Image (cartoon, rainbow, N blue to C red):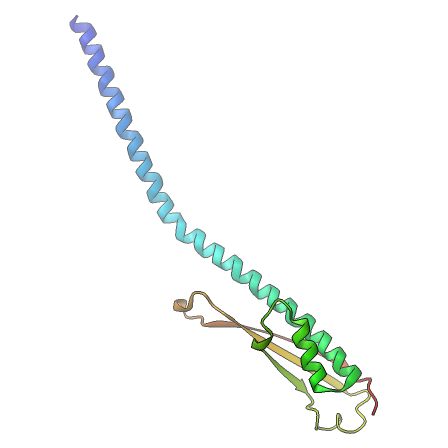
Length: 152
């Protein structure tokens, strides 16, 4: 009887030790997750920001090309700005800053501009979600140039 009792007690000790080990593994997994979570969050933010910058860059490049084409055909600054605002679709058109070179009243655009170069530049500021890092915004720029085909 003492032999059987010793085996039972030994068996009970093993199961108690195994249960204790399982709960320690659960705590270890929680600590590992807490260590990995910030790295995963930073990687996610970096991927999203890169995608947003890429979309803004493509949209601005397309919009400046369309605006330069409209300017080459019409020689009208208002048509250039309205074309740019319409073509910059995924971005907020009010936050796009536009520059047209040469200006409307400056030679060669005020006389016979045919063949002269028209440059449309646009920039868009993307606000950063993590301002405490030190980056308040990322500015994306694009430009396009066309020869003016319009004749007075």
